[in-house]
Length: 290
Image (cartoon, rainbow, N blue to C red; front, top):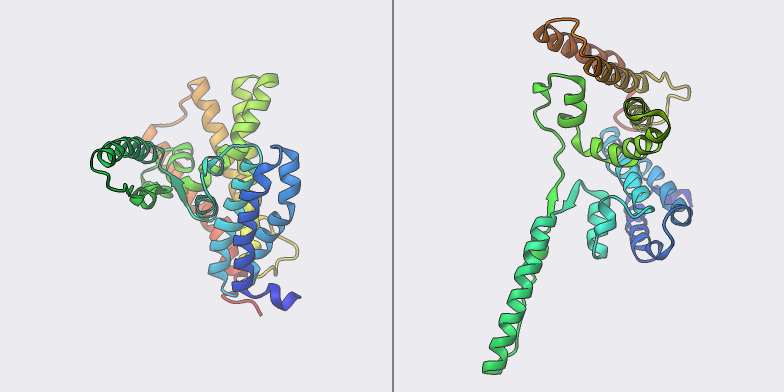
């Protein structure tokens, strides 16, 4: 059985079959816990999926887009939220699940309106001349847009600007929908707006840190049985830096000249990125797993 599960083609087929099951069957379940329980085997398959590929780089990419992003999208789907909740067919559901795509609402609405007008026009023409009507479905090929991943991260002036608007906007969006927004909404009722926001930011970066540590585990072939947590601490540090920025902004504290502050933040980012993120991967990573 293990040999079959190590076959990338077979496991890819199981993934597509599972996403069909999610759209056609699980969508009929009540939202919340019933859907999560129904999707439990799918979450395990998403965790297992990258191990079917031997190259470390490929495992890292798949752990981001499949194990992480697809899992988060399905979690949102369990509560009728996120990009999967507006999918209109199985093809939409599969493509949006596994690829950094989104349905363009403006384009979709525009074509719906134009199609309605064309239907009325064709009906009128067919009534007048008795000819059969045909409606073009070319709009289906223009219903998707690529998610923006990077937006000139080298121009970032703050940690918030870097992580929230410029670096991996795709992952930031999913973290905001699955972690930040629910946590902020739940805590602000008890702790107030500012405190809830800071705790939501820290919680978001902790989850991001755990997911990146998992990606590191895939890249190193699972060799780090006792994780050093260097990768995780990098993202925890970024969350702390953003929280400090939020506090300083709320208090209107200015410690140094803005130009010096920007330079200091960039230096801290580069050094922490190298010693806590790049260095562990280079030290423990392997191109292929035995």
